[in-house]
Image (cartoon, rainbow, N blue to C red):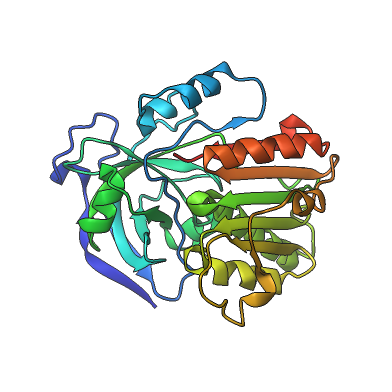
Length: 333
C-alpha cells in the first residue's frame, strides 16, 4: 500500500527565486514495498563525463590546483532546461558514511540510467551534483528517484547528513552525457561496469535499468529489447562500504546467464560474512579480470570512480583492444 505524506513540495513557498523552476506542488509518495533504494554522490563534486579520447579540457581540470565546484566541472555537459521541485520521502543509512535518499518528484521529471542531478537546497549556496542510483523504471512505477550520498564537509553532502529530514524540500535538474538508454532496435551489447567507492551509484542505476529491460523482455517473449550480458567489477574499502551489495547479488542470482559480479575489498580487517564470500575478492580489481570480460566487438564499458582509478583502467582497456569510443567514464572528486 502506498503511504502519502501530508506535506506538499512547492518551491514558491520555500524561498527560491529561480526563474526556471517548475513551480508545482508535488505529493510525496513513499512505497515501503518498492524496489531497494539507490542514489549516487560525489563528495566534493563531479567532473565532466566524456568518452575516452583526447581532451585538453579534462587535462586542464585534472591539473588545476583550484577546487572547482560541480557547476563549473559540468559546464559543458548536457542539461535539461527545467528545474523541478522534489521532496524527501525516505532516508536510510546505506553504510556508516553513506545516506540513501528517496525523493518524490514532479510527473514530468525524467532521466536516463547513469545521469546525475544538480541538487539545489534552500539556504545552501553551493549546488550539489549527485547521480541517480535508482532506475528510470522505478520513477515510472512510483514517481520517485533515489540518491546515495557519502558524508563530506562539502555543503550539499554535509546538509544531507546533518540537516535533511523526511519532508525536506529541494529542487533538481537532470544532466549528464554518461548513460545507458538502448532502443528496442539497437543491437545487443555486453556491459562491463567498473566502479570504485561511491562511483557505484550511476552504474547501479544502469544495472537496475538492465534488469527492468530483461523483465520486459521476459514478459513479451523476447520481442522488446536485445539485451546482452553485464559484468560488474566493484571495489571498496570493506564489505560495509560495498553499497547495494545485496541487490547486486540478487540480480546475479535472478539472471545467472546475464549478470555476474566481482566485488573487491581493499582494507577488510574482519572476516567476510559467509553469504558474501562467493562474491568477494580481497585486493584491487586486476587486469586479468577485465580481460576476461572484454570483447572489442561487443563490450561497452562504463567506468565511475576516483580519477586515478579511471585513468589507469581506461589505459588498461585500450591496451586490451577495446576501442576508445566503447569506453565511457565519469570521475568523482
